[in-house]
Image (tube, rainbow, N blue to C red; front, side, top):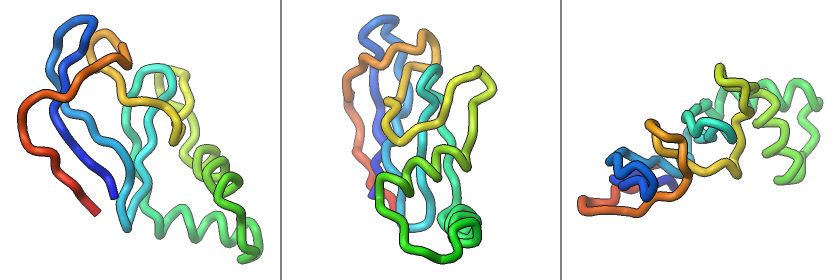
Length: 107
């Protein structure tokens, strides 16, 4: 289950929305260079990976790597990854703090 909340960058003080984690129907990855988000439908990616691997069960770590390869690169040249942190859209810092507002959980 993912979550979404407001954050403030510790470097440039900009306020922005942070989204972390996917849901029941999608994966959410971030660019390791700029922090841009990319969501991908589980239906689309699972069908592609299962076809490519003849429906053989895939270990979780390998599955994550296959998803990252499927999603590809960001227009900034970085790679989308499950491990990449959200970043400030202004200065690209990954140092931020949660601020007021309601945390929203989504599926």
